[in-house]
Length: 456
Image (cartoon, rainbow, N blue to C red; front, side):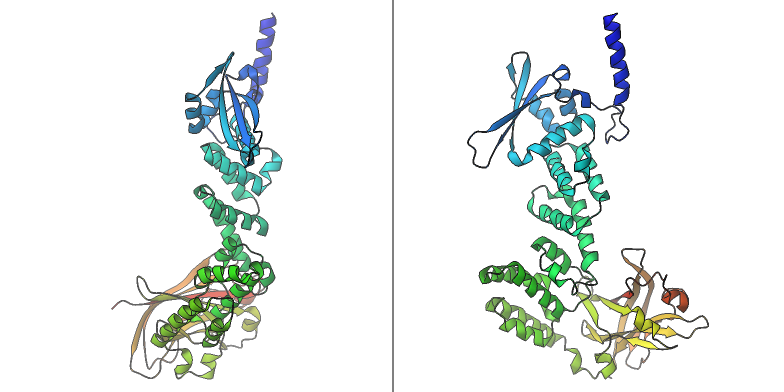
């Protein structure tokens, strides 16, 4: 009867072990067996020591070799070799760094119970610590579990910089690539349109985060602005001149497209003490040769309107063919002030030696609409410029630009108007400009024009 009674309690207790949130194919968890001698066949001795050990500490845990080996190839190999028989049990010594101890204990508990404590689930640093240990000891179920939780948590500035610092310093960076990508997207979205307003915050970013921000092609700033931002950041982060020289000499050209800086800013780079003179000279000479091969805009016969319009940011590419992305930001207030057939002109800009201009217009269709046009600015010589062009606009509900028009055209020297569309967004002017418009983000219309020269 006593045996029947014990069996009955066991069956009742086992019914509560079904897990509704595990990440493996197993429908039961084994929390009840963790560190329980009654359900263990091994003794795991975890040896930890400080970087300069005096008296290493050891913690003993009763474990089931079947459960751990089934969850991890590392433990399968560990329990297959080097075990000592002590009394009635086998034991294995696992040497770890003291910094891994807490995360390893949570990993072992996870293997048994397929869950983590709420305080860890809510902490990105804690989850990252367990993720790295799970990757080190080859526990794929825990890696997947932690990755899914991390991607669901709300990213903030501190956690984003922490994730990128970790991804740049650990050898197993592959395992946190999805998390690092989410951190990159957060930082780019935060600074892309207002980096100049958040200069003091940017000055506190570590190198890994700062690099992510400054290497983003869609930042709303000129290369002169980018140079100023880099110099201010370096002065704030590296107060010692020798340290500042090292970081700028190795990273300035990566962060700033020096070739596209103005002559005035190039002269400033030569004169400041923050950049080693030899490095600055090489960058400036390269930029000047580039400008000789691609004459600067003021040497062309351009009108005042073409020189003083809305600023644009140009990102040129040379392979596999000559092309560029041109970014233009138009404020809602500028659009609201447009009369019918009123226009907003961009500055004239260079793309591989040819001058272009973007024209935004309130078109006088029956319904009225927002039009966008690309104009080729000729200097009067009888040339033909053959290009493919594509217009993009960033929608409020999406994180990327959406293509609105793709076309080709051969511009000739007699072309006066631009080429494009009378209704870029396929909607009425009232809908386009209204408060619930899909196309204004913080009262800014973000436009991108892709220009690709046709291969002859």
